[in-house]
Length: 463
Ligand code: G6P
Image (tube, rainbow, N blue to C red):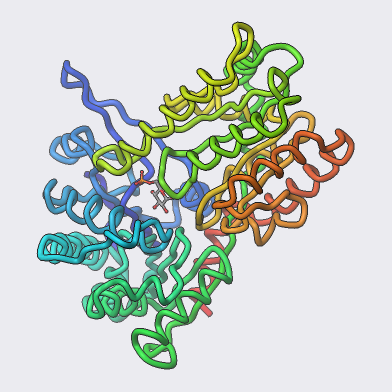
């Protein structure tokens, strides 16, 4: 695997910028991902001595590591598959994700038993593999940017191995309120916080999540941020140049034509695009749409809910069940209200970025109603590419609310009736007002382009 010994800038994350698939003939195909880190690293250029340390995630990635196939500037760690599964599925996505997004059904969950302790040990091992690789690769005094809840223990571990490094940790999720965070066993809560506090700087997407982190430190570790770690906030915006160019390519135009056909002439669209992930609140979104059709029959036949719900983390039963619940409810609504010429809910589950952009361009209303969300980039991307203006129905619990709240119609994500009212308001918004709001939303959404988000974090480590 390619590596750059003596890297000056290192990024560490569970999911890296490239993934490999292995077909029946044994051929490996690589696919590059997008996102803020990818933009940031391309902004600093290939000669900056940057290295991205990430995890081998599937059989294709593991085979690539075994064959020594890779990209310059990327080092994939082939951690034992069971250790990875316990750390990623068991701890990161079933415990830390649930805590920060407040997803537990609390009378029965969570249960921190011996199985949890076993998985926690794997999480430590997994974090240690990252810390060791970073310690090995980093040049003297290098900057290391550690990403997210998968790697909370890395800053402390790395600090012990390499006290010379400048270390940042960035949380892409919300941070739990301290009462909720303290459901974690005390020693584990202290380890998570202490792990991040091993960094020189702990950064978050919004002030709200940064404050929650500080509250948790006070509640669990006592007053004051003990290690002198600085706390930072870096909002992440949409990549306007990339999106506008990508959204006008022929494949997007083709998908727009197909979508128009599916929706039917003259109908309005309520669009949502999410990973099928519990915090996204897709089921309550569908319930709100059903409530709209029930309480305001004049919308029947005149609106279509275009819902793209792309499967995510399907190794976990709770995510599979949720995916099935979304499908079931969409079918129910179609059976209850559909007519020969009108399908009230058009649900697509196969990930297709060009089709997502097509839906963004066509949407009259965008529904973004997460229970909690670190930021939510869909809320920021839609106004940027919208053709004729799109009314945004936005959860007040999304990080994006801090920047977009004024021009969105905001909802309490649990309030299905309230969300139905908001959908009605959004559908009824006059075209002129919608266009004006969309323009302002696009301005706010692009104020912090991904490259700047990344560079700001990097520079902040120097100060
Ligand atoms: C969130 C997390 C990221 C994660 C992404 C996709 O945005 O903050 O760290 O990569 O979800 O989830 P996945 O489990 O597929 O990597």
